[in-house]
Length: 205
Image 1 (tube, rainbow, N blue to C red):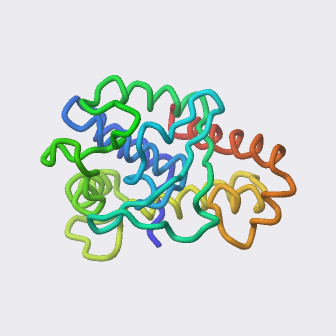
Image 2 (image 1 turned 135 degrees about the vertical axis):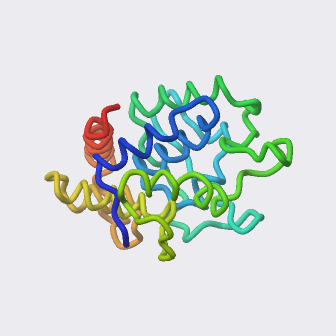
């Protein structure tokens, strides 16, 4: 999979960090810092954000215009929300027209907030052009590239920056690390937060 380096991610975020694309900026940052699957990120509602405990609860997934059960039972858990990422989300909460607990984090304006944005259209219209500008993919690239590449990118960054494999796998919520996550819940959570902050620091947050 095509990997986005922190240096390239800075360019992507700068490209999207204008008043017209604050939603897309937040979508890109959230994917990059959490390794959420696209269907998980676009299925988020504000009630899923646990500000107090610093986590996002994955309750549902949204794919191809409908709710789904998610990839597997183990993926329906929590992801770390470090203070820096929480501040970014709070800023977006203040900007969006839809901020009630049951509203989508990334609502479709065309559908007046009734459903989430389309992950594929959002990627095609905003992420890919920003990635071209950052030198991630060439102009006219026809290969696969989208929000899921942020997941590969974070895993690659963590692996190269002395983050233990068990922590990386717990962040990605891979099924075969369930036992490790259960046994070392507190230790892993602290390491997850440290790992996420390491990435956010690398992209200048």
